[in-house]
Length: 394
Length: 172
View 1: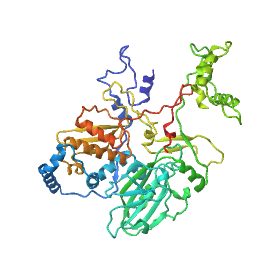
View 2: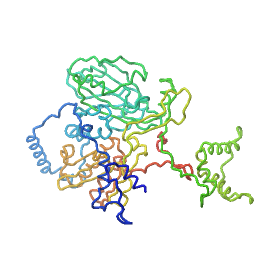
View 3: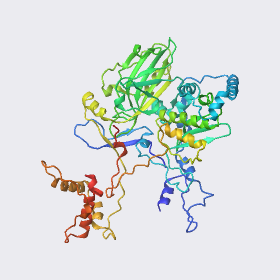
View 4: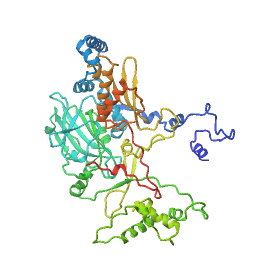
C-alpha cells in the first residue's frame, strides 16, 4: 500500500497502478525506470537555476608544446638517474612534501580548491550563481601562543579557543596593488539564516601588509552556537583596481546587528572594482570559550539548540491490544513529560540533601522482590534497577 | 535518499527574555554528516560494492598512472591525487611502482586532512604485501580513518539504552 501511495505522489510517474500478477507489481524490471532515474528526475533543476558565472580572473594559458617538451625531458632525466632508480627499487624514495605542495599550488591546486569549496557549498552561499577559481594561494595561520601555528586550509577544523586573536595572513603580491580581505561566517547568523556575520574586513591593503590597510570591521573571534554543529568561516581575498572607499561604517564593537552582512549584495555593488582571487576556509564548532564570550562580551544568555528529530510513529490506540504488556502499552499514550516527572519524583524521594548517596547495587538482580508483588511490577522494578528504558530520560 | 541539506534546530530550554530565535538553521552541507545525523543511502545491501557511505576512497590504477580520490555519494569526486600530476611525477622514478603508491598515499592523506575529511569508507581488499596495501598503510599513517561511523539513531522513549550523542562529546 505504501508503495502505491508513493507512486501517486510523483505526478509524472505512471499514475494508474496495474496489477499484472500476484507477484509482480508495476512494470517488469526491464521496462520500468530504475531508482536512480527516478531520483534524478525528482532532483532535476532547470538550467536557469544551475547556470554559473565565473567572477574571478581567467586562467593563464600556458604553452602546451613547451610544457610537453619540458615534461618529456624531465621524465627522461628521471629514467636515466641511477641514484633515483636505486632508491625506488629499494623502496626508499621519499618525495619532498613541501616541494610537492609548491608544485601542486602552481598546477592543479586552484582547481582542486574550487572542487572542495563547491563540496562545502562555499560559492553558492557567498555569491549565489557566481564562482571563482582561487589562483592566488592565501596562507592563513592562527598563532597558538606556544610557538605553534594552526594553518587554515580548505575546510579543516579550528576550535574557537584557537582563533581568539586575528590570524597571520600572507600571499604573494607585487608592490603596487591594493587588496581587500574579508572573513565571514556563512552559518552563524542568529536571526536570518540567509545572512552572514562579518568577522574581519580590511580594505586598501598595500601589497601584503595587512597592518597598513584600513580596518573596516575589527577582528571578532568565531562563536558557533552550542548544538548547531560546524560553521564555515571563509577568508576571501579580493584584488582592487585602485583606491576604494566602501560605503560601510567602521565597526570596532562586537554588536551583532552592525556586523550583519551579505557578501552577495556587497559584491554586486563593487563588482566592477574588485575581483576575488584567494580563498581559505575553516570549520568550527562549540567549545567552552563560546559561553564566556556570550556572557562577558555580548552580554546575553547563551542560546543552546538541539537537533529536531522527527517524532516517532505511534499507532492509534486500541481498545483491546493483544499480546502487549499493559503498562508499557499505556505509557506510550501518556504525556512523556508526566512520565518523566514521576520517575524524577521517585528518584528525589530517596535522596537526602545532607547525606551522601547510597552506593549503587552491586548485583541488582540478586535482591528478591516481595512474593505478593505482581509480575509486571517486578519486571518494571528490575528495569529501573538495571537502568534500562525511561529511567535514563530523567 | 536525499539527506536534507540544512540543519534545523530548536532550543533545548525556552528561557525568559532570551533574544535568540526559536529556530536556527545551519546551511553547511557537511555539518549533518560530521554530526552523524545525515542519512546514508541505505537499501543497497544486496549490491556489491555497497553504497552506504558519505565519502568513499577509490583507487584507480591504469597502465600509466594511479589515481586516488574521495567520492561523495551525491557530489561525486571531491578530492583527487594522481601520480601523473606535476606535484608527484617530478620527484618519482616511475609513476606506477611501489614507491609511487607509497608517496601517493602520503600526498593523498595530506590533502584529505587539509580539506577536513578525515573519515571515509573503503572497500578495497588489498593483496598481502602488495602496492595497494602499502598505499593504504600510508593513508592510515597520515591520519585518515578508513571506516565511517554509523548514523546516530535517536532512541525511542521505550528503548533499553541511550547511546551517547556524538555532538555532545567534547574533546579536552
